[in-house]
Amino acid sequence: MPSPDQIRAAVLRYLAAVAGGSASEIAACYAPDATVEDPAGSEPHRGRAAIAQFYSPLEAAARETKLLTLRIAGGAAVFHFLVRTKLPDQTVDVEPIDLMTFDSRGLITSMRAFWSESDVRVT
Image (cartoon, rainbow, N blue to C red; front, side, top):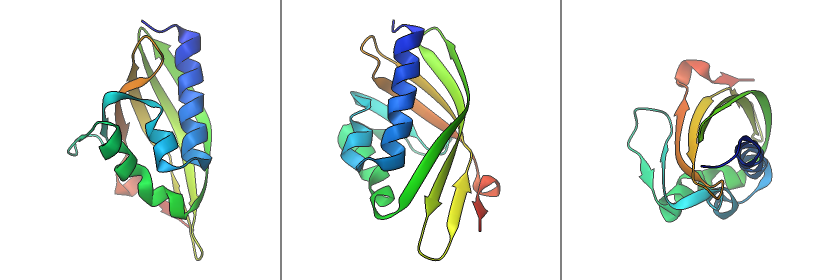
């Protein structure tokens, strides 16, 4: 089981990758056979290739993230964060709550993102 410090570092690495990394760099935060369910209840993306494809639309936009709350228990973390995507004519803010599990190396084995369209703010 990963330590709380490993999990905290993994969450921060993930948020940094979402803020400024490529889809491949984000996918590298995940274990090879990981799953992403974003939003929760949708069909999961399985494996790094599918995860990279899921994140690929982010590459075209300027974005930033900010960790708001983090809770760690066992081999899992739940965290609330802001992701701001800056498009040429608008800014999109979403504050999902993610539930992640991790392997002994601190790689994400599963992620479920809790948010809905009503949580999206466009300015």
